Each structure stands twice: as C-alpha cells, then as structure tokens.
Length: 197
Length: 250
Image 1 (cartoon, one colour):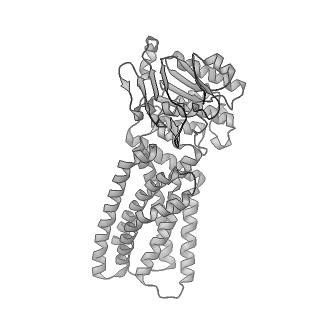
Image 2 (cartoon, helix red, strand yellow):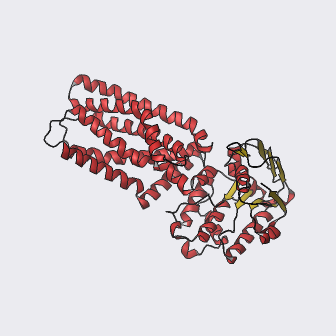
Image 3 (cartoon, chains in turn green, purple):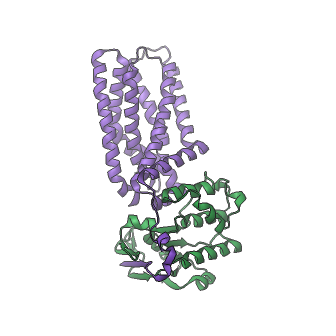
C-alpha cells in the first residue's frame, strides 16, 4: 500500500478463517487503520486483492464486500444532530434490516436507555463509541473491523465490547481488530498481525 | 502486494450461517429516499443551509430594490438579476450536501451502507428541495420589491423548475468532488461550478427575459429555452449518475 509514492506496507498475505479474531498491532502510522480500510473497501490498495469466501461463492467485488463488513473506527462517525436510535434506524434501513434492529445492539453496547433518544452531539466520546460499535453490528455482518474499539471506553464499556465480540465470533463471524492494548491482545488474539513500519 | 483472503465457510456457522453470510440490502430507491429523509431531518434541526440561503435571498433582493429605487430597470436586467440572486443563494447552501458529510466523518458510513448512485440521488433530491425553497422565497419577494407587469407564469414557472433542476444536478456533483479536498472548498466550489453552470444560466436568463417581455417572438424563444434547460438537467443528471461512483469512492 502506497501513499504519495511512499510505501506504507507491502507483502501482506493473510488468510482469516470463520470464527477467528485477528489482532492488528503496530506503532502509530505503520498502516493498521489503512489495512482495515482496505479490508472494508474504503481504501483501494496500490496492488493486491481482498477475497471473501462465503462458502457457496467468492466475493471479490469491492461494492459487495462493503455490504459484508461492519466497520467502527474513529473517523467513521454517526450524525450529531440525530439520536442514537435515529442514527441506527437510518443505517438499518440502508442495510435493509428492520429500523428497530439497533435497539438491542445499543443495549448490548451499554448505552443507557435514558440517553438513546438524545442527540449524539450531547454524548461523551465514550457514548459515541458505543453507538459506532452498535452501528457496525447492524445486519449481523460476517466481517467486523474495529479500529481501537475500546480507546474511549471505561471498564464497563470494555466489558460490553468483550461480550459483543464473543457473540459475533461464536456466530461464526470474523473480527479484525486494530489495538495496541496488551490486555486486549492477550484476551482477543486468536491471531496477530504486526506492522513494523 | 496485499493479499487478504477471508473465509466464512466453516461448520460452526450452522444455524446462524444464513444470517451472517448474506446480509440483506435495501433497494436503490429505498437508499436514495432514506438519505433524502435524513438530510431533511438534519436540516430542519440545524437550519444551516436554509438559514444561509434565506438570509442571502432577502438581503440581496432588498438591497437591489433599495439601490434601484425609482430607476427604470429593463425586464432583461430584472431577468438577469433574479437569476444572480437565485444562483448565489442556492450555491451558498448546495455545497453543504457533501461537505458536511466529509467534515463530520459520516461520509464513510454512507460509503459502507449505500450504493454510490443512491447517495447522489438522495443528495440531489435534498438539493432540489433546497433550490425550490430558494425560488419560493426569492421570486415572490422579488415581485414585491421589483414588480414586473404581465409576467407569463406559464413560461416562467417551467423555467424555474427546469433551471432549478439543472442547478441542483450540477451543484450536487461538483459538491461531491470538492468535498474531498482538504482546504479551500468554498472557493473551489465557485470556481468549478461557474463554467459548468454557464450554459444553464444563459438559457435561464434568456428564457426568463422572454417570459417577462410581453413580446411574442421573445416568448416563443422562451419555449426553446425551457427545452434547453430540460435537456441540460437530463444530461447533467445522467452524466453525474454514470460518473459518481468514481468521485465518491476513488
């Protein structure tokens, strides 16, 4: 992967199986987020390809892959002017799932019911992160990509993330998570990819 | 080389396999409509675009009326003035359709959840609503402060509709292009929009002058201008839909 003539990383070949949690580690600027965005189809690699094998067919079209992915990262935001419920209802309708599908996910993310109908602009950074994580799980995508999912969360929030991740992986989903937290690497890391930079 | 293969083909998928493997997708029309509805809802809560276009329309028309008070103003000049007000009032709000999404970081969510052309269509619907609101504010105000006797509304209203459509279609596409630049978005929007909108503005001003003129030959020419404006709208919308994928994702 190259930016402005500078190669960010190269020669990355990964095969991720169903039900696996893959941790992506590395210093700032080594390409963890870019790697996740390549998987999500938000960034096009300078060369190489991403292929998803769904068992009955293979997906290499980037447009279709975007619909197989749930992504949560610091630069993927929800609408400040809408409430958490409205944000998730909007994204759910775009994903073709019932508008109330997000209610249960907000509960799983630990967003207090009393706050769910307030505009997101009134939320703390941790509460916004819970909404992002819930949004990434709408439509139960087979692949979840989380960039520093617990960076703004308290201990209780981290517990909710653990549970959401456990549910997703137990259902056979794939999770690729960028983090440098040693405890999370130990707890979640079925496999680990390290970017040296 | 970046090779990544992700497989979800394992026995453990079991009963949840169908749920995980094939996420449903909304139809193109649903996506476009939902994006339009969301933009209307956000706009009604913030009034970013409505506030700026309404303020611009009112102040400009009132200032022009005050400056030209008592002076004889030809109908051709009034036709040009009304489109100058409509153009700049609309441009002050139209660029926000995509700039706000990019600056707030919500564009990435849209990229992951909706087809590119549905995003364009949703934003175009919102910008059309905005342009028609600008027209609904500006034209009556203009008529009050700078009266035009004998206006052929059967010509003028189609000109406003076709002109507004072309304006919204072109501005929506240009807004998507400039939204991804890092700085100077407003200046860039005006610079890029100007040559794209020139043919539309020339036909709109000429057609409006015909609708104001009460001269049969000019009125007949206005009919041709309505045709030109409609063709501009069709061409601009079609071209934008065909090219939008590259602007939005690359």
